[in-house]
Image (cartoon, rainbow, N blue to C red; front, top):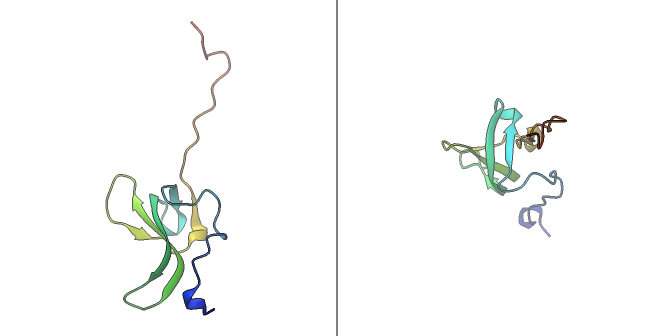
Length: 91
């Protein structure tokens, strides 16, 4: 089978990185975005094919971008602050 016709392998990506995930793009100057699509993409200017490109959009809208390197992406979900002891249910 020719490598040009192989399906995109997502098994090298972390489990949290999928369509709809909030991420921080470390290679994109720390911009936060939402993953729109992960798949093969050919740059029309250079004709270079990226087998596993990650397309992102800003959280509040704006211009989409492609992550230069998916290894620089980190999870953008913020965990809620832990509850402080003694305050929950006080009343």
